[in-house]
Image (cartoon, rainbow, N blue to C red; front, side, top):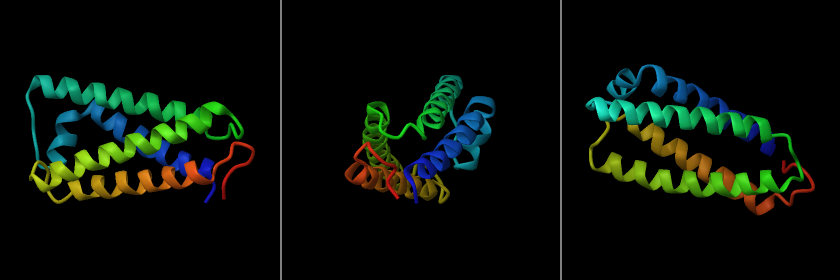
Length: 129
């Protein structure tokens, strides 16, 4: 798989989840077996906006082979997904979410591994395949 394809897939995931958390945060939390107060709903909406912003940055940068920005983005996406994987795993083990929470654990792990791989093989002069 090419880096641009991997980023595109991740960007689409982030955009869809971002819209969900922005527009219907209570429902999104309900699906995961949890709920929150008005402060948590506001925080969920901010999270949604952040996901939408990141997805647009990723989408806009995905074909910028050879750029320092894309190399940096790949490294940051690796680090961010690895950290969120650890948080999601801890939350899942603690019983914060229902069984659907394991999909988040798996997705963050998959994206962390993917970006880790591309960070190691991507030299900036070509799109890793």
